[in-house]
Amino acid sequence: MVVVMPLATRPIPPGYVLRSGVLYPIKRVQGTCNGLGDNIVVPLVAGKKIQVGNYEITPTAAVTVAWKSGAATTLRAGIALLAGTTYSENRFPDSFFLETAVAEDLVLNLGLALVTAYWISYIEVA
Image (tube, rainbow, N blue to C red; front, side, top):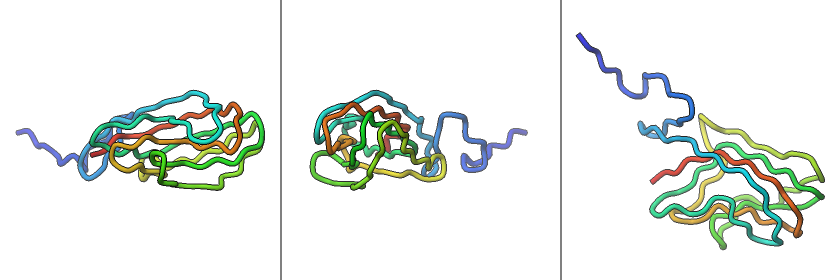
């Protein structure tokens, strides 16, 4: 006899997040940006939101940054960072920290034009 357990009672495989009974693969992106103002760090996905569960930001000089959904909506502003220090947030797998609107880029807005490294873990949800 085979017993099929509901998804919620099965172990969640590594590299996935469970949201409303659906398993979503965790995606990762890393890189650098250096433009004053808006820098797209995760491009939009048609018909989906981007939910960020983990991120790290490391600027080369002191700077104030903001996270945005597309060009217009500020998700979190006024994050003052020190030169060479890493600022991070970690919410996966239980929750997420930032969420864009449907079909909008995740944007890191820099208060100065300087090299800033980033590392982001996210999922794409409908």
